[in-house]
Image (tube, rainbow, N blue to C red; front, side, top):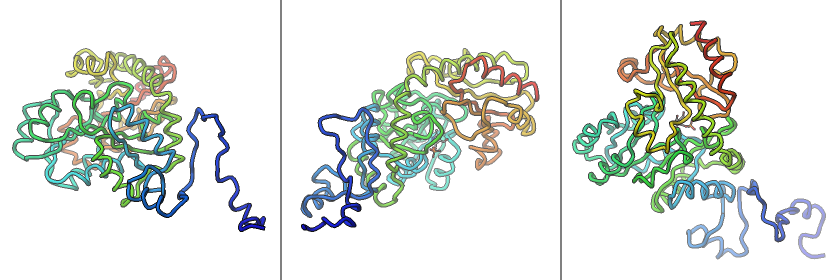
Length: 388
Ligand code: PLP
């Protein structure tokens, strides 16, 4: 009997090779393996050295997460994409490679702003004020301009082509968090952006069952991001990547529905007597409506924010408690409608005076419009507004 023929050994070593034959699976296989065996020590050494394509260990890349990375790079038109365990892990990995000062959007996602404040050496600007962006880059000599394509939660839209031009004139890279627009609405790199960041937790997965993040960009950036997954360890595990791939396949359909329903919801809220102001890039009067229309091919995203006429936490709380269909949930971009109170959730860490200055007031509410029947979403909002 040769080595390994004993039953105790055979059961341990069984099913190590998938029996595909000539058939290619239409869904990428979930490869849960942490480590990868090579024919020779020399082969493995070459993979570790990056001289040969392949896999060695979970933090260095895995086939299933690799399939997601290849798909994201293809969708974004970038040389590489690297996946992390959350959007914040991706943002932190990117920021860890940015030396020197940064110019960043003042009304970015609360945790991003907190990370930038903790990092220091940052100038916050209104990215729709191009003169202010130019002046901040000149004064700080920053080499990174960091913005959100549709800001969370004020839903300002940034002009990617113009910001890319301004950033590049200062030898700075333009990094865009495109989580709220997704590749379904536009490709930032085609407009001049250098780095695209996603919270995969949001629309790209879209089912509320997995967290993830990605940094998409050049080959050099990809190498730096791979160093982060290897050394910091926040690499997206294969099963999570597999779920994101499954969710992402319906992104186009979902975004079409999210955008159409959000337009209905925004229009309805704009007429409601208990609503003081509505933020939605598709509404007449939104300062970047024309820009959004051209940049996103006639669509405006699935997020709507509004301020209650009663500008107090208590009123927002009564509104959230009265919702029957929508979830009161601190996330966005899922199939289901989700409503959130930024002042006590996403932007809780922001100094109250700064929140007020930006317009994230106590009665300010954010809606991620889901793919339910829009008439039901509107009825639920009306019902909850009647409780305010
Ligand atoms: N970027 C934006 C625009 C977000 O809204 C969020 C979360 O809400 C993040 C990044 C962080 O993503 P994650 O929750 O996956 O860490």
